[in-house]
Every structure is written in C-alpha cells, then in structure tokens.
Image (cartoon, rainbow, N blue to C red; front, side, top):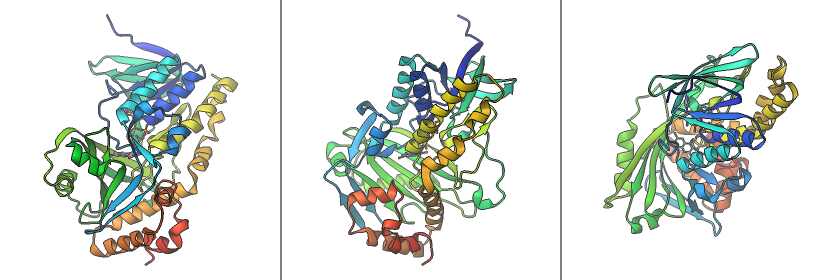
Length: 409
Ligand SMILES: Cc1cc2nc3c(=O)[nH]c(=O)nc-3n(C[C@H](O)[C@H](O)[C@H](O)COP(=O)(O)OP(=O)(O)OC[C@H]3O[C@@H](n4cnc5c(N)ncnc54)[C@H](O)[C@@H]3O)c2cc1C
C-alpha cells in the first residue's frame, strides 16, 4: 500500500518525549485535532533518561502507577572521597520512572482521546505558508509526509529540530550550557539489588566524576540504573564517559556479575536565563527545546511537563479565539512569561549554582568545599534534602551552605 504523502491537522507536535506526549494528550482530551510524531519507531527504545522524580509530581501531572519503575525514600550521597551519608524517610519521597513506559502511556492516551500518533517520522523542516504551518517529515525508507497545521510544536528536546539553537548570546555566560550523560541498565542479583533499593544514590567528588556526578537508581526488582553525567567544559580536557561509568561499576558493584541490558545516554542543553524566543509565528517550542531542563541534577521531566501544562490552555484559547486568523500567534505572547513564572526564580538560581558547582569540581579544593556543604546538611531530614534538591530551597540551609555553593568561600 503506498504511504500517504500529506496530512492536515490543527496541531502537529514533533517529539513524543515527556513534553510533546503530555501536550498531545492534553490537547486531544479537549477535542483538538492533534498529530503526535517522533523519529523513534518504538517509544520503548532509546529510553535515555534516568527519570527520577519527587513523589508529588505523580499526582501533580496525573501520572499512573504503570509508568513507575520503583519508589524510593532515601537519599544516599557517596563521596567526596570515602564518606557515605544517608537520609531516610518513613514515607516514599519519589519514584524512578520507566521512561519508555511513560512515553508509551502518553502516546496511548493521545490515541484514546482521538488524537493521532505517527512514529518513525523525522521532522526535517517547517515553514509558514500564509496562516498555515507546513512541516516536512521523512520516513526511514526515504519517503516523505507533508503536514499542514494551524500550529507546529517543536518538542524535539535539546535537538531543537525546528526552532534551532538560540541565537548566539551577547554574553558567553548566557549561552547554551551542555551536560552529557551515559547510563547502563543492569541486571543484578537480588542481594545486590536489595542494597540499592529504596534510595537514590549519587557519587560526588572529582575522584568519582570530575565536573559531574555518578548515580545508581533502582528499577524493577533485580534491575539497576548506573549512570554518569558531567557538564561539558570546553576549557578542559575531560575523561571519556565510557571509562568513568566502567570505573563506577567496578567500585560500586565490586564482585557482582552484572549483565548490561541496555546502554543509553544523551545531552541536556539549556540556557540558564531562558531568554530565547519560545515562538516563531505559528511554530512554538516546548520542554527541553526551550531550555526547561535544569542542570543541577540534569533534571527535566517535570519541567517539560510544566511547559505543556502552561502551553496547552494557551494554544486552545488561541485556536478557539482566532483559529486561522493572522492575529492568532499574538495570542501566545504570554507563553514565555507564564512559563518563566511557573518554573520560578529558584529554577534559574539552581541553574547558575549547577554551572558553578559542577564546573569547579575538578580538584581537591572543590571537593573539600562540597564536603563542608554536605557536612552542614547531615542533621537535616530526608524531606528537607528533597526540598533542597527538587524544590531548590537553598536559602533554608543556605545561610551556611550558600556561600560555598556560590563559591564565595
Ligand atoms: C542521561 C540522562 C539522564 C537524565 N535523568 C533525568 C532524571 O533523573 N530526571 C529528570 O527529570 N530528567 C532527567 N533527564 C532529563 C530529561 O530526560 C529531559 O529533560 C526530558 O526528557 C525532556 O523532555 P522533552 O520532551 O522536552 O524532550 P525529549 O525527552 O528529549 O524528547 C524529544 C523527542 O523528540 C524526538 N525527536 C528529536 N528530533 C526529532 C525530529 N527531528 N523529528 C521527530 N522527532 C524528533 C526524540 O526522539 C524524542 O523522543 C536526563 C537526561 C539524560 C540525558
């Protein structure tokens, strides 16, 4: 059967990650004629994100139990050096999502609400013709699909496939900051898994991962996620992530005959101030494509979901009020400011702290500073640590920790 070569819809969403999948399901549930596309042929593949979230996000974003890999109720910080600190709560503090299952669930919701999902389609270009967007998508066999839509949403993540990178920053520190991550999904023995279950474990300090951090997160029983992430520093030669993750496995899982089930990874690229354009006419950016990922913990899922919660009603209003009229793009002028408000000033502060903290973490002096910060946190509760690391509530401890974090001492 020949594949179709053109399609019409109200909203085309390019990218079925957390941002695009969530927007598509929200719009479809409101009766909008939406088409969700992704270059992946199977949304379970390339599940690159370690996907740790605070527990409150499950309810806040209406996520179901079926997308949860495991729950956790402890923080464990290993390093700098040989120090290991744990903070435990009696209640679950968060979840580790099955990232593939999340994307599949969102796409399925979009379908159930009457939207369309087309996989294995790579968006190549998009331009405005009158009051319509025309987007060209290519299949693996080289054939193309031309989609005509009232709106096209670039939810292609840090790739920014349609919007492109933000214009060069006037000040270098306002440009894109990049972090590179690598993760292995491991099958381990039940005894080994027990030792890492129930907790998020991070390895901190330059002897673990210079200018970054390592982690072990539990997934389903018998499965762990082992990962490394670090900020890209053009000024410094950095050791390859492959060697760092092997070393992490050797040190943390000594004597365990683990089996690597999957290897994946990716980039997180965000501007710290998020001043880039969020829209070009009827092309709108969402999630990582407009820098919602925060570099402090390489964390972006809930911020990507926030961006779709902000955009969905605006897009619907714009569509209802002015549909195909030339005034329609004006209706989204509040999107950028509303999203900035929803992310909050702490988001931006934590991005700045992230750059400073991770980039400086390549020598003993910085390890010592970090150790002092962690020592200052020893007396706090696990819930407080969550408020610090997920809520970016630095000022609660800050008076002691902030000067170190900011590099003033
Ligand atoms: C190693 C690693 C670990 C991470 N761990 C965490 C964590 O623990 N917690 C957390 O909250 N965040 C984490 N993140 C960040 C988080 O995964 C992202 O911020 C989040 O996935 C962003 O969602 P998004 O929908 O904006 O973009 P993405 O999830 O990147 O989705 C974009 C989608 O667009 C598709 N696409 C790209 N280009 C095209 C194209 N041209 N045509 C069609 N489709 C296209 C891609 O296939 C992809 O499915 C991690 C990231 C990495 C790299």
